[in-house]
Image (cartoon, rainbow, N blue to C red; front, side, top):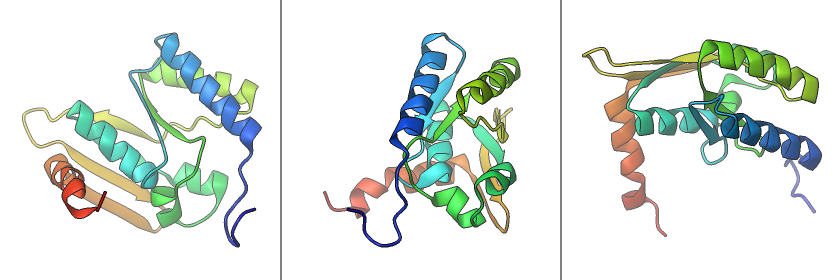
Length: 151
């Protein structure tokens, strides 16, 4: 029984998406993959960037158009079956085409950026919402969570 206001979960669609990403990883088509859960897509992108020591520029307007909702919901909404992945442009375009055959929405919404001698940064936007910060700021906030959140 779901509480009022909580969406249902399309378990079959989530299972297909998980298998799709798993198979892409096993085939070596992806450089990284991270589920979108705690903190939503913005947190998943930040965690990937922190782990890789790279920046990212992400425009989620295609997701806003596909799913509806606010920019804030697209940035921070939590739910099962979503993934942030990275790979070469060719691999991602191929996954985009293959995803359509399986009913898995694959949206190319950004790019990874290397620091090039400067500071890596995160730039995320979705409709009316946006955020921009240096990777070192994101890492400091992320690593301080353990000290602020009771176990």
